[in-house]
Structures are given as C-alpha cells and as structure tokens.
Image (tube, rainbow, N blue to C red; front, side):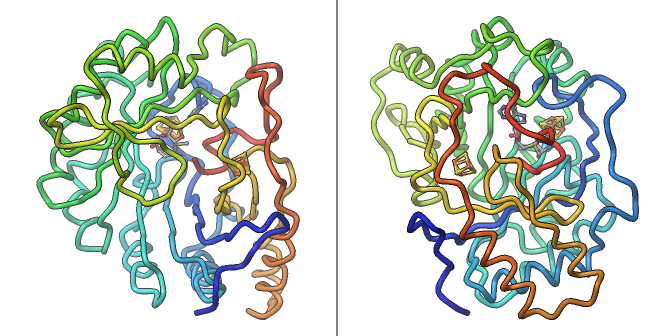
Length: 331
Ligand code: SAM
Ligand code: SF4
Ligand code: SF4
C-alpha cells in the first residue's frame, strides 16, 4: 500500500465514501422530495464487481478508510456480500456503514459477521409522531430497536446523527444529548445543509452549531472529549459521567475544509472530490471501456489534485448548493 495521495492544498486524502444506491426506504424532508424522486437506471448503477475493483484500487493508492452509504445502503440486494469483500482488503483500516436504521434489526448481526464494526445511524428525534413528520414513514420503534440490536451484537462505535431543524426538532437537542448518559452512543448534531430546493427549506430552519452548543451548555458543564474517530470533522464533548459523547459538526458555519480528507464515489460511478462542487470524474466509463488499473489510478490522482480548497456557503441557504441531491451523492 502506498502513502495516501495529497491534493493541491497539502491535504492527505485517505477516506472514500462509496454510495451503493440512490434508493431509500425513507423520505427525510431535508434530503428527498415526498414523491417523484429522480432515480438512476439499473444499468447506470455500478455493479458490485465494479465497486470492488475501485475500492481495491483506492486502497492500493493509500485510502485506508471506507464508508458505505447511499441513499439507504441496506436496501441494496446482497449488500453483505459487498461489505464482506471490502472488509478483506489488505491495508484498509476502517470500514463503516451509514444507515437510517430501518433494516438494522434484521441486519445488525449479519453486518457484524461481514466485518462491519462501526455504524453511523441517522436519528433526528425520539418521538414517534415526529419521526413520521420528518421521514414521512412511521417506523421510529423499528429504528430504535435496530440501534439497540447493533449495540447488542457489539458494533462500536455507534454514532447517531441528528440534523436539527428549527421549529421541527430543535426542542429535542437536550434529550438527544442525554441519550449519551446511559448509552455508549456518540450523538452528533449536524448543521442542516441546503440540498433541497429553497421552496422546501426555509432559511429560518437553519440552527447553527454555536446555538446548539449554547443549548447543550445549559444541561451541564460540557467536558471536551476525544472522539471515536480520531481527527474527524466533529468537535466532541462529554456530559459528566456519560458513557457516550456529543459531537458537533458544522459544515456550514465552521467548515472543516482545511482538514478535509475525503472523496466520494456516487452509485453511478462518478468520483466527487467535494460534496459541494459540481465537478465529477466518470470512473464508470473507464471501467466499462476496459481501462487498466494504472490508468484508473492516474485519473483518480488527477481528480484529487483538482479538489477545491473549500466551499463558499457562509451564507447558508443563499442558494441551493449542488448539482445533485444528497441521496444521489452519498452522505
Ligand atoms: N440513508 C442513510 C442515512 O440517512 O443515514 C445514509 C445516507 S444519508 C444521505 C447520510 C447522512 O446525510 C444522514 O446522516 C443524513 O442525516 C444526512 N443528510 C441528508 N440530507 C442532509 C441535509 N440537507 N443536511 C444535513 N445532513 C443531511
Ligand atoms: Fe434516505 Fe438517508 Fe436521505 Fe433520509 S437522509 S431520505 S434515510 S438517504
Ligand atoms: Fe471537504 Fe468540500 Fe466538504 Fe469542504 S465542502 S469539507 S472540501 S467535501
């Protein structure tokens, strides 16, 4: 395995998020429209053999961390086959999955057997009716039981990601944080990013991480803590005596672009070096036109060198930020 590639701003690129599908069994308001969702055709989506080849190439280039995401990764058929294969790549230090948790009750143990030890699970509320309001599907209890199943089979760390929306779930900041007292979960508050058209997102729904932190400081003195993932984008705290930690992720107001180490591969085989940029590199075409590993590596290296320095979304919701919705990129 080589040393991780460096981009044009001296950042070490060692993390790849792979989206395996743009389909999802929920319709979170901040991510997808209620209906009429734009979908990739079957032939457009990378086959597992293609994903595995790209993952192996990336690891040979020095990528040491891979996350499987989507859409909802657990709705793709035979996802365990992909996880098990990627987890065996020599040189890969960390393989994780991001899921909405709906299918975790059924999958937790199988994911563990397929080599998954780390999970990110979306959880924006602890109230069943509100879960329905946010995701448009009534399955809070199923998700909660899935989270507990993941804990039971030994998956660790379990990170619970909450997107906070003013007027929807901002009154639950404290309760979500208090989950960390009795459970070894890492509850992470994420600033809302403007992926949906402006008609569906009001700028007043945005809650900054500073405001979240201020609210959290009202519960108890927050102690700075080490996070579960080393130097990721979250800033971590612990409530006194808590088993888990609280993380604050501020992609908008305190962006972490200077430390960004990630690449994204979309379900249709486009490499994106920045979540908010519109440039993509078509790796699917290379794969399907018989490109050698060496030429794919060269193309990835060139894309990495063109990774933007940062996004320019200081004025959140001043515009819709990207050419593709989040579920079609891979969060
Ligand atoms: N379906 C899986 C899930 O929800 O965990 C994985 C894909 S989802 C796109 C990945 C993450 O993106 C989730 O944690 C979700 O909350 C986050 N996300 C989606 N839209 C977002 C937005 N507009 N702002 C902030 N985070 C968003
Ligand atoms: Fe689906 Fe995840 Fe988007 Fe919610 S955030 S709609 S679960 S892809
Ligand atoms: Fe990385 Fe782009 Fe996100 Fe900044 S905006 S952290 S450069 S992906």
